[in-house]
Image (cartoon, rainbow, N blue to C red; front, side, top):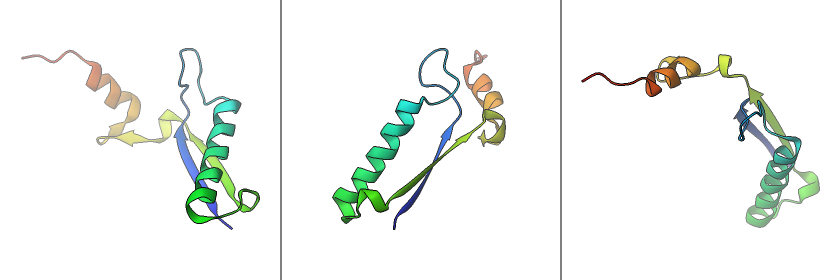
Length: 79
């Protein structure tokens, strides 16, 4: 039985959203399950998918918390 764990950031994909919608999560679950069926022949009813949403305070990039990294990336560069 396949077990798939998906980590996504707890950020919306559209303005005003602070997380993935139920519809987006359902699409991920269906899509991953269908991919395992198509590629490996694993039955969809035997596939488990877990989605973990990670708060932006709980991950980093480039040695910084992600919000600081993004602020640094968006800051005007002095020449």
